[in-house]
Image (cartoon, rainbow, N blue to C red; front, side, top):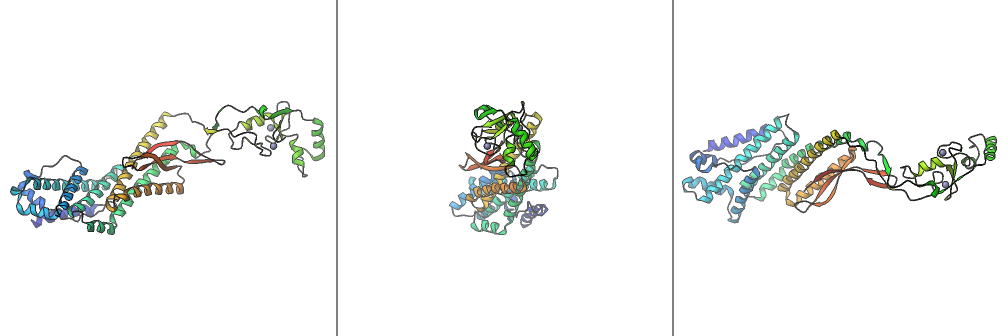
Length: 410
Ligand SMILES: [Zn+2]
Ligand SMILES: [Zn+2]
């Protein structure tokens, strides 16, 4: 009997020591009683349930809660099963043993899957992280179940810090992947790396609303040219004299094709085609006189110029967003493990902290995306996060340009 106990415990320990520091988690419970009983009564108790690990864990935890209500412990319940012998066990005792057995096997399966994932360099990162999370959670549940949710066991695991270290490590793996994917998205759509092209909204301005064409006196122009040279900027009022014969936008003289235009608002004179181009341009200050910055009209609304859609690129983007969605779910799972260990309330705190941490990293590394709080509440009534393409500053306005379809549900 004790040999059997050791074998099971040892096999689990061996698996454990094979794992990288990332996946290392203690399995400290010497299971074996069930294995011993199984040898004799295999057919009676070892009906493996085709359920997911989570279902088996939930049922084992439900057993624990039932025992707590009866003021009994899980270990004592196993000892009773061992003492009584299977042939005398009541139905509920047999169910308890089956649940125990199935969950224990699920934990071993999970550990083997995690172990294989660490060794398999070909395996997709997200698949690996998924298995490591499952293993971490199983091992935590195994400890909690065997100790009948004794507060000491949680404290011991908390103090050991190993779970926290693994949770951090998993968060970092996922964070690296998020940054990598966002870099791919940026490469597909370098919108933000370059100047964003904007276009005005609504109809163009008619410059005749702001002034009128005038005839420049050629004599005056020629006198100036004689007095101070063509540039005429050596003396203090050279600028003003210069403005009377040259357009301050293109610095060319006025001609038939480039007639002088007088702005009524401030009295400045500019070339008519230049003023037209200026007023209908996309500069933040296109509503101001380019000479004295007097406001001629309200700034027209602008929006980013839509780029022509590219099917190939769109598909690549879709795949990247889908992967980001999967990562969002894994972040939730990692935080859930954290919540298991530190208390339900810490789950949301950890998740929000993860998102803020990523935003900090994006800012430091110049990633043009960020997570903002979503207005939608998730299943638990908690606000999620939304992936958004960076914030662009144009003049004094802040414009949000483009938005990803990535949402994280907490
Ligand atoms: Zn001009
Ligand atoms: Zn002016």
